[in-house]
Image (tube, rainbow over all chains, first blue to last red; front, side, top):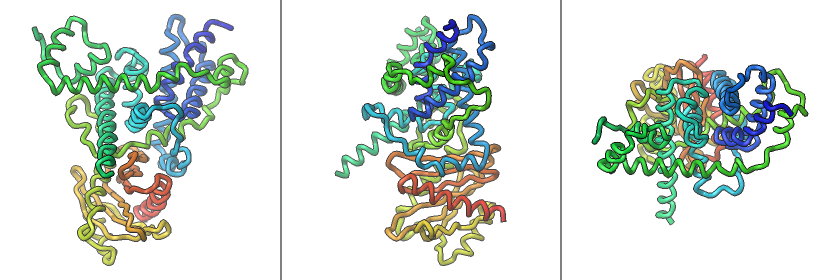
Length: 172
Length: 263
C-alpha cells in the first residue's frame, strides 16, 4: 500500500467525527466520508507533497458538505425535500448517548451549518483559527464571527432546553 | 497591567488557544474584574468540554469496511458526481433548527453581520404563535367568517397576493388572521384550529433575501416551525404537532400559497 493511501486511511476516524458533528445521523455521516474519500482518490495527484493529509481531506469534505447544502437551498423544489423526507428527519438517537451529550448534539444540529462547521473545526477538531479559516475558505474575521455566534446560539438552545425541563418539573 | 481593552471576542480566543501568551495574565485579571464575562467564559468552557465528550467516542469506533475499501481500491471509484444521498439528510438536519425563543444572539452585536433571514423569520413566527394561538377571544383581528375581507386586507397590507390555504383535508379550519410587524415590514398571521382545539398558524411576510431558501425548523418540546424563503416572500407554519404531521400540513399550505401568489 502506498504512503498516500496509508495516510488517508489514518485520517478516516477524524473525518468520521467531523462528519458526525455536521450530520448527526451515522449512516449519512459515513456517506459523506465516503464521497470525500472517493473524490480524494480521484484527485490524488492534486495532493501536494508535504501538505497535511488532514487539512487536504477536511477541505474536500467541507466543500462537499457546503456545496450540497447550497444546492439544496437554492432550488425551490429541493428546498421542499425535507418536508417530504419526514422519515429521514426523524432520526433515532444514537445509542449510548448520555442525556447531556444528546442535548448538546441536538443543539449543535440546530445551529446554521456555517456556524456549526466553524465551531466544530476549532472546538472539537482542534484546528487553529488560521487553519480552520483556510479549510473553510473564509476570512479569519468571518470565522471568528461564526464561532462566537455559534457558541452563543448553542448556549441559548441549551438554556432553552434546561428551562423547558425546569418548567416540566414545576408542572408535575 | 492591562495593556488593552478586552472584549467578548477574547473569551473565544482564549478558549480556542488563540490568545497571545503574553496577554494571558492581563486577560485573567480582566475576567476576574468582570463577573458577567467570567460567567460567560465558564459556560462556554463547559460547553466546549461537553462537545468534545459527545463526539470523543467516534474516534474509537471501528472504521466501516466500505470506507476502507474505497481507499484500498477494492470498490471502483466513481469519477462522477457523488451518488449517495447524505445531503438529503443533511438538508433535513440543517433545516431542523430549534425554535427556542431566547434572544441568544443578543449581546454579541458587532462581532459580525450574520443574521440569517430565515432565523429571524422563524423566531418571529414562533413568537407570534406563542402569543396569539394561546388567546381564546382575541386570537385574531378578522375572523374566518369574513374571509374575503381578511385576504384582501392582509394582501394589501403585506404587499403579497395572499390566499388563506384550505387545510380542511388536514383537519384544520381557518379561525381568522391578523396583521403583525416583522422587522421593518409587515407580516400576515393566519390561525387554524382542528376539532380538538389544537392550533397552528401560518406566518407570511415579504422577505428581501436575495437567495431562495427552504428551511424546516423545530424545537424539541415547544412549537415547531416549518419555514421557507422563496422569491420575495417568507413563510412559516408553526404548531405543536408531531413533526411529520406538521411537515404534511406545511407542504399542503405551501402548494396553495404558491399557486395563490402566482395567480
